[in-house]
Length: 154
Image 1 (cartoon, rainbow, N blue to C red):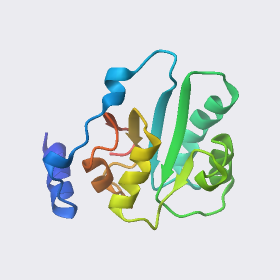
Image 2: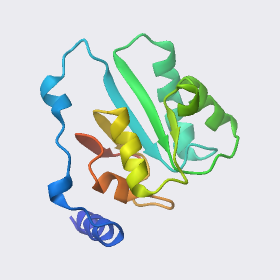
Image 3: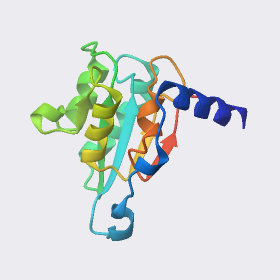
């Protein structure tokens, strides 16, 4: 419970959210089984870091299987040109400038990052960073997806 209180206080202090501006998500009401499920993964560490080491296999699996699940990576960390970074980008079809699903927005403001993710329309976003070094909890405080999950980082 205390972690939730710390998270709420940090998010309110860093970037207050006006609850009246929280978007509604009509995609939940109109979701049909033939539509692909869109999953987004938000992290600072899509580089030579344990987060990328653990998540690279997810993107590889999604790349080689014919599923109704589409993955996207939302990166706001550094590009270290590591094999891990290059593999994740390649598995997702390249970066967003190449039409892929790897979005790099390290230099963007919170509002621009929020708009980028919302425009991609993920149904579930997994925050792989949580409250660790480099985290940007203000992005998730703006409700970028109908379902948001803190996973991996604590």
